[in-house]
Structure formats: structure tokens, C-alpha cells
Amino acid sequence: MVNYNGTLTPENQNLFKPGNRAFLYADRIFETILYQNGRLLFWEDHYFRMMGGACILRMDIPIHLNMDFLEEEILKTIDSCNLRSSSVRVRLSIHRVDGGLYLPEENTFKYLIEANKIDGDSYTLNTNGLVLDVFHDHLKPKQALSNFKGGNAIISVLSSIYAKENDLNESIILNSESNICETTASNIFVISDKTIYTPPLDSGCVDGIIRKNIVDNASSWGYTMEEKDMKTFELITAEELFLTNSIRGMQWVATYKNKTYGNKAVKDIFNKFSEQLRT
Image 1: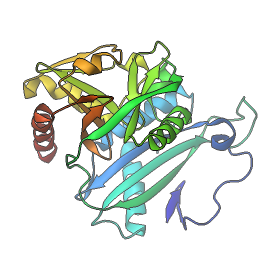
Image 2 (image 1 turned 90 degrees about the vertical axis):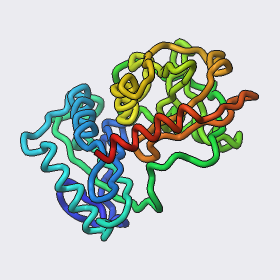
Image 3 (image 1 turned 180 degrees about the vertical axis):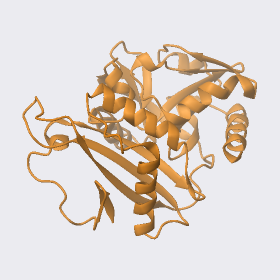
Image 4 (image 1 turned 90 degrees about the horizontal axis):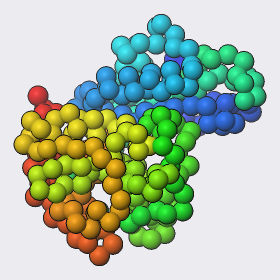
């Protein structure tokens, strides 16, 4: 079952018709949320990131579509799929209602909630380190639209195809100034001498939920945190690399080109992140 604007519908039933603005103009944004151990992790952060994106897209946000209402709608969808006791990947999407060409006829939106079971506990550190390389074919623009998840994901799609073709777990996406931006589906972090580095939001990276948690808490975990523009050659001198996203949590990187990395600091950060998550 999926939840389309409050109505539970079998997932194989057609929901959209020609003229849908998400299809025609990528006039949409979405959030991917992990439901685990009976709760939506970082739900408040996800909600406010989505509503911030809706404001940037000049969508009108109905008063009733508040954080509590959408949480109940998500839980209703999870219940309809009999997944309350499972780990679940939730995708919450909103798109502007149909009508108009580039200029919409109105700015209200509809929402779609999808829930899919995940096997096992998502927030566990990977046993085998990831393999990365750089995706050079297309550059991601440095703009506010790049900070949230929406119809601007074609570079991530092409990056994921490149990663598969080259036996990589993910590939590194560069921005319009050829600085490191992010990877196919994650934010990227570099560790050197007890300092954690990550690209700033104005690099064009997604304003990741786990990224925000790492940036906000690194100093209390005994690390210096610095957001800075980085070139790919700086990865060669790094001691460790790790990636973050809302579904996998943290993942350590073992190999970039001919460089190999350990994961001692990553394990320490992961343990402190996990401890905080339990409180």
C-alpha cells in the first residue's frame, strides 16, 4: 500500500495522469526516512528540511500539514503494510498539483508516502570498506536547490550508473568548481589528525540529516570539525574517509584509486553517534 494525499492505495494502482508536474518539470521534492525500533529517526530534521525546500520552490504549505499530521500519515502507511515491527525505508514525496506549463496554475501540493521493508538493522558499520572513485562526466551546480532532494537528481542517477559500470560502491560527485561535493547517495567526510572535514553546504551538497548530526556533535566527541572546499588530491593524504546518509547511517571507505584507508577513528565516531542515538 502507498498513501497518496491521505488515501491508502495498492501500490500497483495508477496514481498519476499525463500532466503531472513531477513528471513534466521535476516539480517535486522528497525525503528518505528510516523507521526503526518503533520510531522515525531524525523525523523533525527531515520535516523541516522538506518544508524549507517547499518554501524555496514557492509551494503553499497547508496549515494542517504539520509535523504531527505527516508523522501519523507515515505511521498509518507503515501499519497498512504490516511493517510496524520491521525496519522500514520511508519515502515522503510532495509535488505541485497539476496544471499550467512552466508557470503553475496554483502552488498547492500533494504528498505520496511509500514504505519498504529493510532487512536487518540499517545503522551498523559496514564490515568491508567501500570502494570509491570520481565521476567526472557532469558537475553539480552550486545553488540552494542542490541542498535538498528533488527533481535535480539526474547527476546522482548517472553517477550510480558510472559506479556500477566501474565496480564501485559509490562515486564522488564534483561541483561546478571541480571541488568535492558528495557521492552518489551520501555526504562525504575526510579525517586527518583528529580533524573531520566535509564540503560546506554552499558546495552544492545535500543538506544531509546525518551530516548535520556529525557537524553539530563532532567537537563533543573529541574531534575538530571543519567545513571546507576540497579537491580530490586531498583524499590521497587523508587518514580515513566515511560516508553518511539517512538509511545506512555511517559507512567507512577502504579504497580510493590506489589509496587504502583504515577505520579506527570512524569506528570511534560511529560508536559515539550510536550511543547518542540511543539516548
